[in-house]
Amino acid sequence: MLSNGLSVTKIITGLDIAHRIEQMFPAAVEDALPEAATVTPAQLLDACSFLRDDPELKFEFLSSLTAVDRLEYFEVVYHLTSIRLNQMTAIKVKTTGRENPRVPSVTPIWPGANLQEREAYDLMGIVFVGHPDLRRVFLWDGFDGWPLRKDYLIGPGGRFPGLERFPGESPEPLGGRG
Image (cartoon, rainbow, N blue to C red; front, side, top):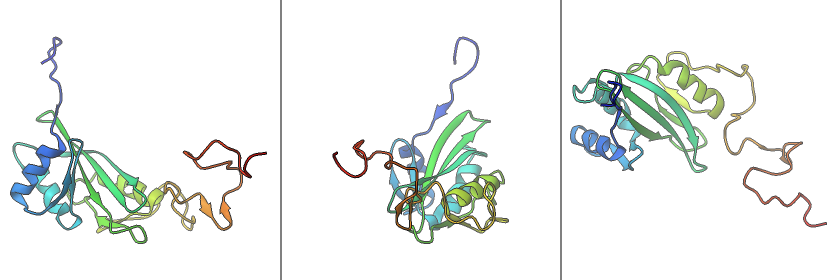
């Protein structure tokens, strides 16, 4: 407890949350790091329901859902909060590849995932199977592509006009040395 009477939010590590999930659902965890546990897509809904309903965890609030482009695959990251128990954790799930990335929707567990999943769909192209209304939320219907993917800047003929180089590339100007 802090001197002002408030308590510090407890962080439950990915290693700890992975252990708890594994106790309930053997083989549900693909990987575990201190930052987050990675759950298999097939066990995602069971694991999330457990995290929400377990009396020692009570992760009833999905504070953030986002997607990460890992080049070979995408992952969806869920930041979970228990307001009642003042604790937080994070879990991840890998999509089924890059060409047709899919994961189950968690909207039946956390209705607040509705807009967050739509955002990840709109900007990354991840399909959330079972989502009640999966459609674009920022971009218009018919928008070509998924603008937050790392390969979005590569179009017909190479880079889009106006880009000197991709982020992280050598600062040497295009066309080589002069």
